[in-house]
Length: 629
Ligand code: ADP
Ligand code: MG
Ligand code: ZN
Image (tube, rainbow, N blue to C red; front, side, top):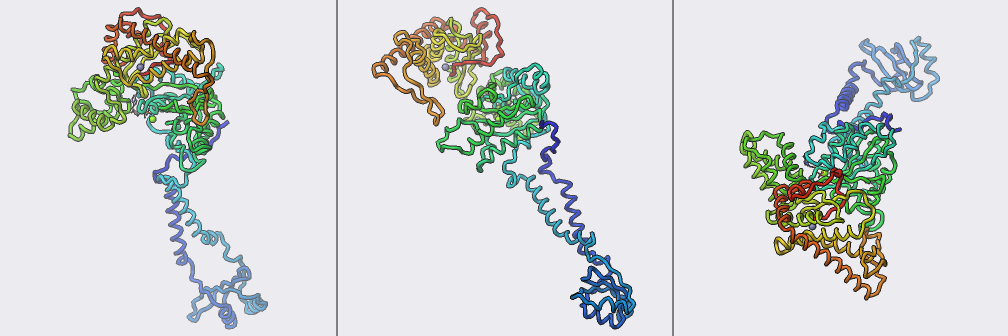
């Protein structure tokens, strides 16, 4: 219903001088000048008092008169020198003798409507017109030059409409999994009928999850570019302004614009800025951010993806998002945008280095190897800095030493932001992840390994991801026990190879303990405790997170629970240690391979360690569960 609305597109000329405004302005100045000099083009009119007029009449000087509206008289009289003089006089009172005496003297009398000629009216109003025109002109200009004083609530998204250069998937290096998932969105936007005819449900919202600089924004633009649709971009922090209600009205405006321009992509960057769990702020009640979030939820519910609008959003903190945002019909689809590994870093380098003249000594593979822990944005920055260093030295091409210098500058300058990883630390991470990964091949209830990596993910230094062979909604006791064993793989591997452990094990230990506790208290998986629910979980709304377990059992039971949990964990550690100790050689060679290649998928691990290849399942599906760090 909105598609045939022909309302003009938002003003895209803001900032540039407006030719129409300029012409209008010049016209006004011209008329103004003409108004002041108009006297020159007409005969001079003398204004005389009525008494003087009657005297002239007595003396027979008057030759002709024109009576205007019974209020004034214009006419000509013979002056002393004989030249005719044009005069005008106002009639101060109703003079009954005027007309008889004029007729008596035989003077030519005519009438006219007083000065309300169109020209007169125009000139009367001219100063006003100029005034209004000037104010209008200033108003337009102020909007253009970034003075936002008149723009509350107006979506900033319009600035991102029709941006000249199109981005496509080929501008995004790597990210195979993410691209695969987004292909579907692209093909829907290209041809919505194809999908709606089949009755297929199209996701309304897709959430891009990944660390800063991994190319989430780039990816969203690429989706719009690939599909050839309009792209509206707004950052979550733009919604949250000083004035209450502004954010909500911006959301409304953004979606209105989207509807008018369907098919299109609406991209909300930094979703966590508006989308944090409601009520998590201690200020209490309905603050501005909460209103904005509510409006966003309302808008998302209020349209059908059949209209051809897909909402993309990006965040690096999916854990803090309000659960309402992730419900079906909203952002029910998540796409992981991962940090690049060594091969992907090389591909990103290729894209960005293509824009600068490279010296003959450049070895992009070597640069990729020397930049572990860098994101796509860091690499784009690296190439730019290298070009700057070369330019500063008046060189014709960018050479290896320039990249070296640029890297040092970036690593030192933004060490806070970029994870700089020493070789020792990388090796410990590699050993740790290899420990997790290897256990997957020796436990019969565990899901198969998807891939193992020492590329940082979130706050974790590395990751070993597994992938269930089919969708499961419940887990067996055997699966959970094996999962706990895998959790301890990192900790055990560190002890075996280094005889000490790192803080990187915190999450693993936490996960294992939590699972064991659930086994005992909720799932009835500890024989000595039986299938009894111990305690109740409480979900206090104001904290948004589970924080407390309501104790409804005796002190004695508490001790038995602790003992039971400890028994499960001890058994898991023992099993992990036993497997890894006997497979220490494989553990070490897997760690070495990780040092060089950073990421290994299941097939590569099997090939490296001489395991038989697995009958294939679809390896493009996103990872489902993972053990981090
Ligand atoms: P995010 O939104 O995830 O923080 P951006 O999309 O803003 O990251 O990325 C910043 C810049 O980094 C991009 O404009 C691009 O130049 C570069 N970049 C990041 N990832 C890639 C990639 N995979 N391929 C090419 N360039 C990338
Ligand atoms: Mg971004
Ligand atoms: Zn771990």
